[in-house]
Length: 217
Image (cartoon, rainbow, N blue to C red):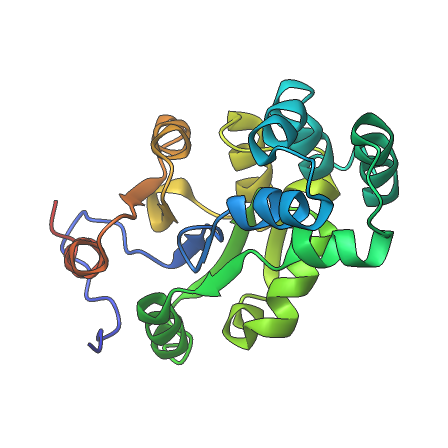
């Protein structure tokens, strides 16, 4: 599908800025590959207990907000579960949980050629995951203007992260659309006047996007 540059209706602000979420929007992910991969490697480890420990202690949040290094993360779970695996193999399992959303890959490659739009990435992520994604899914590198949670010590759905993004790039909320799979993130963005598309079905997404850029409510 091809979108013509914005032709805004009278008194309707044009969409000039598109902010993309990353996980389960541009690329899919499944953390069970990590939990189960380590559990299978360790034999005596329960993947469910491993997952519960990480979530109960908010280790995932600490990684995404840059408050814990991956070395610290590894040392903590290694000690807790008496893991035998080395750091390198551990991080391989941690990183290799993603696969491309081919529909969004094609969309992003096309929309990036329409110079009318400024494109941004806003993601709850950490340094290992974003490096893995950039190396393995080159289309994501089309999004050069980025706000990454671990670098700014904030995560979605907190409104202050959306405010920070608008201010950092001097964006007007009424000219900006967020594409995100998480409803809480959509609600926070809408509260600031940002247009939103809740990403779940790609066909539904393209229809909503087409309506937005044509200025149809």
